[in-house]
Image 1 (cartoon, rainbow, N blue to C red):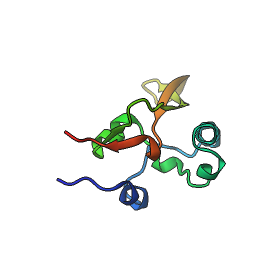
Image 2: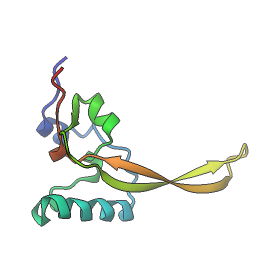
Image 3: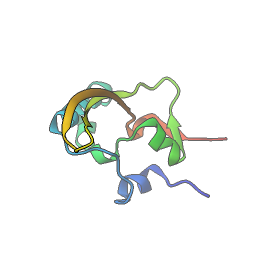
Length: 106
């Protein structure tokens, strides 16, 4: 099995992250991309194409040695047996931008 190139992954509409459309999450990640890669790179940022370590690994990629994860928070809901929300709690999520990954070589 050959792995897709970064360009192919970014252009493939069937490969998407678990991003749910949160504007706050998008802003948090954009701020970190701006700090690491500069303002110009923020224009290329697509929250649906910024993946977790596990997702990148499934695509045949791993983080470049020394790269830092982009940090964000997702709020998860705990529901009772009736499906009613009984609690909401934060979960830290680590994401890797396409510039911070490389193909797995072995």
